[in-house]
Image 1 (cartoon, helix red, strand yellow):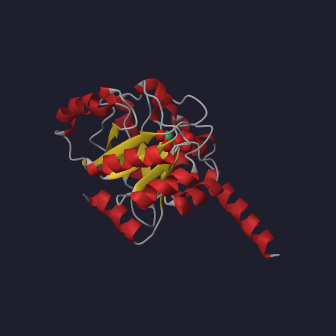
Image 2 (cartoon, helix red, strand yellow):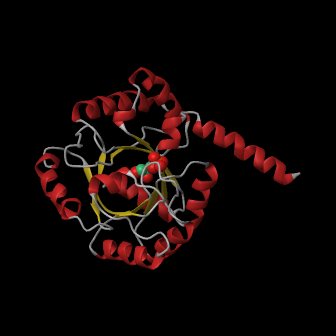
Image 3 (tube, rainbow, N blue to C red):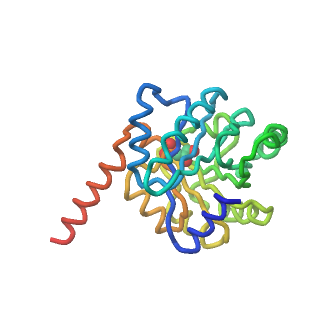
Length: 257
Ligand code: 1GP
């Protein structure tokens, strides 16, 4: 319960968390050292690993490589958390797994079938298992989550229904709620929805999908996200956090003139 407890603690202290999402399928292995260096220099507090079609052998290798490189950073090793698309994407080498149930959808495979199939694999690992209610929100384009899970995302204009879904997830015993617009979403989860959901649950709230700049991260935090996930933006440009930092300095500078 190490990693979950640290998320709870951060929430209690109002320390916001940031995860970089790595998709093993999209990693350019020749650039891995560079990528790791950029992760180490970034403000990330967690690394999430997942994708829609990942194969096991590269999953293990990626995590081993990351782990070899993380202990050298000043503030300690970054926790590596699996964010699996299905039961074959489990590696004993990670620290924890978001044990997801797609509670926005009505496809039993992603509500319970994959989870049942994952048990024999999980039982052979020491992974910390974090039960997560996973809620997909309509994003203006079809995302891989929706396509692969064959489920309909929730209406982005109906914050009440999303909130009831999150509350049902909490009542069912999930330890986290993840509001997801989908990787590469055109539109991120609406801030108003983040606000309503976070005001109505006690457990920590993760928000991700389609967040592409510092302002998007900041606004998600202000709306009540406890942890923000950045995938595509960092994948497209490993200097993402440096540029964003410079940009925000410029903005702040101008606003004080
Ligand atoms: C996807 O929420 C994550 O599951 C991150 O999405 O790739 O759009 O940042 P992006």
